[in-house]
Image (cartoon, rainbow over all chains, first blue to last red; front, top):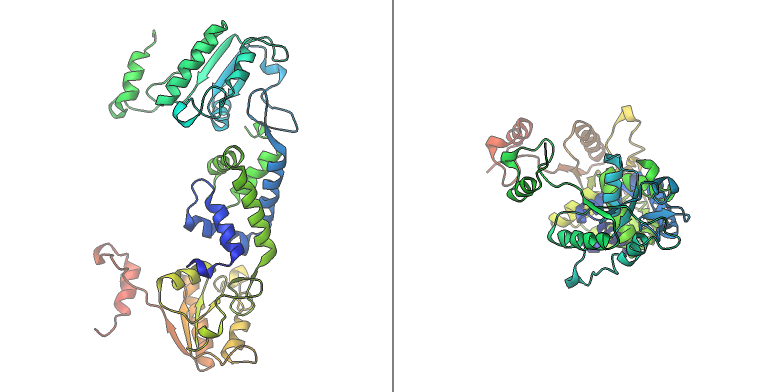
Length: 205
Length: 205
């Protein structure tokens, strides 16, 4: 059937299929929607992509996305508590920011330690985090509390362990967000791993 | 939370949300994927959109998308049978082309007759189809069979009726694709409307 598509349409379909969660059917639906019903939307997306590629960068300090050299999360008001919350991805940062009252600083790893895939401390910017912990010039007054908010996978556990060691080496209090039975969840239907973790991590009531 | 997004990221999210089937969560996932893991893909999509907007047009004859003034479906080899299959959308055309052996010509309406929404015969290009039926100069040798492949909705039925009258007025044989119990379907679980239609449309066995 690809013979029925011209080269430009084929390329558009290929480009749309590179988006996460978009298969051949969705790509075709999107392409025909943009071409037939929303050419303005297509031009808008083209321009938005161009502007994003040209003007969105990683903050050199916290590694979150920032624009025009101003990071929304590396501002003086967030320094006061001396807290830094370490997350894997920008999406995790936004989830914490929108659901919790935490208004301290962040550090985005961009992944998990995975030596087999060639992802070591440097790839995650941990040298940057280290200079943050030492309170080196230009990076504020050091870190009092290092909050680890890493996904509880095997590699995540290794990463959290490494971060914990790193934080303690520089005298920071290291904490970790709680893992356990989700709110609204039922013990009976909670998976064994989660339940075991909730039991081990029981707190004084 | 939108305060956490810079203006360029906000615009990118807005542009992605205009794609069919993409909500706020998917848009964020797509944006972070493009920015963090596939900047080449973002540039590829930007360029593919630009090329599509500049170079994909409607074929003036069959109203399918075409490029460089060459329509893949308005070629002499498809003229011989004198058949024209009328569909609603480009996606319908491609579905018929890929699943059936039909290799005649097409006509894409781009919608259904819907007077309340201001969609009349002109909006669907039926004047163009009419000049095709009369065999006017430059439009081939007229139409022998007009095949109606319209979705069986209320407006679709009205459109099909209109097309049937139009075809017969110019002496074309008018046929309609069969509607009934889908292959692999079970009578018991087929909806009443479909079953009634299958029963009325029974054929000699």
